[in-house]
Image 1 (tube, helix red, strand yellow):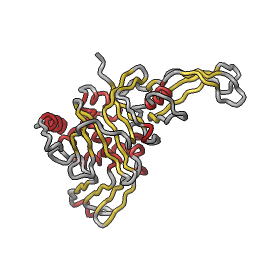
Image 2 (cartoon, rainbow, N blue to C red):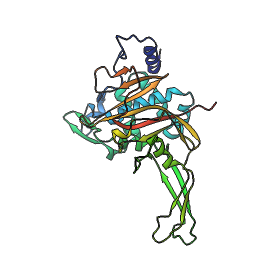
Image 3 (cartoon, one colour):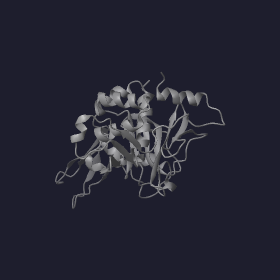
Image 4 (cartoon, rainbow, N blue to C red):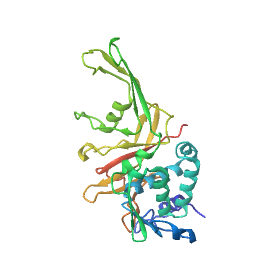
Amino acid sequence: MKTLFEEIKASIKNNYNQDRSFWRPVLPWGGVFTIKAGRKAVSCTPLYVEIRLKNTCTIDGFLMLLYVILNENENFPRELSLHFGREFIDCFLYLMDTYSFTTVKLLWIWDKMEKQQYKSEVHKASLVIDLFGNEHDNFTKNLENLMSTIQESYCSNWRCPTRVQEDQQRSININPPQEIPHGNLIRLAVDELFCSKIELCEEHGCGGLREFSQRVFCHGAPPFVVLNMQHWKSEDLAYVPYYLDLSDHKYLLEGATLFNKEEHHYSAAFQIDGHWMHYDGLRNVNLILLNKPPEFLLLSSLVYIRATEK
């Protein structure tokens, strides 16, 4: 029996111009999970016999990307098991490969999300879980310490009250440059976050020079990184780099999540063997092979995977 990933790759290989869509829906928006209640369920309060999921696009695109990433490199499942747990990774892949899409969403919600991150209520005989909100809150913030980085800095002034500082971050938030320089803005912003530099110390009355070391990953270079791009304007995204150097490691562009402000809806794009696909769980035909790389003008995030060392 072929895995879902093998089915997708086969559809790319056997594609004909008149039909560029995958043969069945993948991770459709929302979901209904029916509970097979036994005798003991009669005494439960409140009583519900199904779980309904709403507004799941805030996790759908990233779950699709996670599935593709886990299949891109035979070592990635083992590496990511150190962060997510081996049982989670095995269960996640099994559920995706058996097309149990509502269950795989519940796995993420109950295993990785905090109760306060989503709304839930019992309506008639259904437990309704609503994931309306921001995908970075519902997915990226729940990646444990996968992308944790640290940067040390030292002030040249021995009298500086905070001569030695450490800046630790759990996610990679890159901000648009204050002044628009020439060149690749995204790469410049990444270098600003990761590269060593010397700046004037900002402590009041100090006047010294603060030297920043290179930012490094706290737990080694992760298999993939997510760049939070939600504060960038479309006019600053004319060029998206296909590779980045992060803490002495090369990362290759794997995909992106896109945000439609008018519909308040997220979708995703990713590439397999150099072929770009667009995923949108809200559409009836929700996985489509693209003729060319997508336009990244509605970016919410960029996803890069660590290049294989030769």
